[in-house]
Image (cartoon, rainbow, N blue to C red; front, side):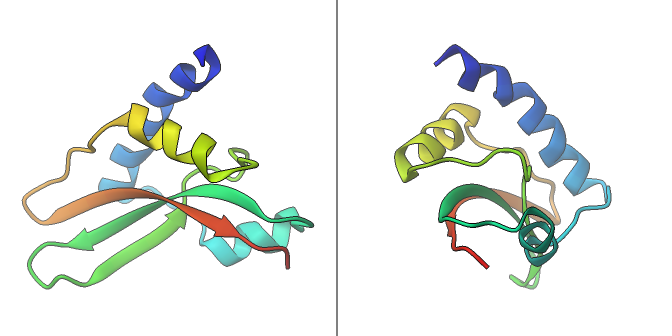
Amino acid sequence: MTALRAHVSPLKMMWMSCLFGAPAVSLHVHADDAKVTRPVWVIVVTLTNRTTGKRVREDELDPEMRFDNQAQCERLVAQAGSIPGTDDFSVVLTCRLLISV
């Protein structure tokens, strides 16, 4: 449980960097690089334009943060809490099953 809490602050820093245009690598690139051989759960950050409702970017938060089950992933997302957005953008974290490639 303590290890999960250690990730919360860096996670929020990464979300904020997404809001301010820091480069992020798409999910398919992470999957190709990692050569996933078994299903794992990952945290996905989605940036949405509030005005248009269109998804601007959707990326895996950290390719090194992989979870064996959904409960582990969702527990960390819940600990992170809500993510501050801006007037123009909203940020949402979700857990997604990444199947082997």
